[in-house]
Length: 235
Image 1 (cartoon, rainbow, N blue to C red):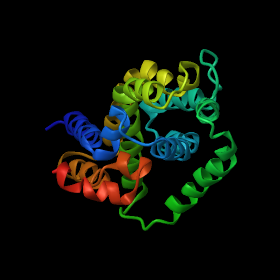
Image 2: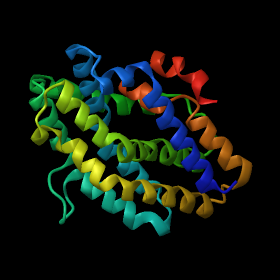
Image 3: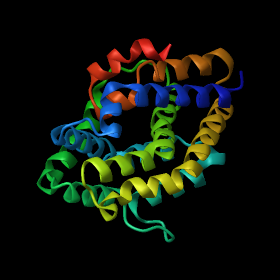
Image 4: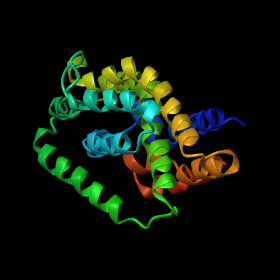
């Protein structure tokens, strides 16, 4: 199977498992308590406040043919692209303030920064930077796919069941508008990276499987336990 097909199939499965989980179904269907919605919003912010730094790493390892599109994505994330609006982190702050969680912003930004340190201290599973860069591309790009396919659904659920105004949901609506393109470009970059570094066949497929061995969305937005419970649904 071509690498593009392997990656896209893995992403579709990750999203399928994520949306089938009881945690996500409760949010989307309006069965969750306000505290659960707020915990989700905080986890979302804690995860994505660090997005600029993760994209900066991807820019550092991007193959020559993908440098410009990764750069564009990074500048857009930081609000430095001439054709885009606010930085995505600022849109997350709008979301949190709209939910009445504005006082939590400094702590959530600090925890996002702490998550970078924690990732740097994790044991290295791969033999070279080539494999580390590939795994980072696969995992970070998975979130582009998730947002491309679910951002509108989450925005609607938060408006309907959590009472947020559409103006507070720009982080979600922005991603629903632009991430279909970003999702396609992300897979282009993964394939370019594999070609450039001669990561082919079973080796590349094994790295994809190892990177997505658990549901990365449930782990980041809910808990390690939620990701572990979903493990049996992934195979």
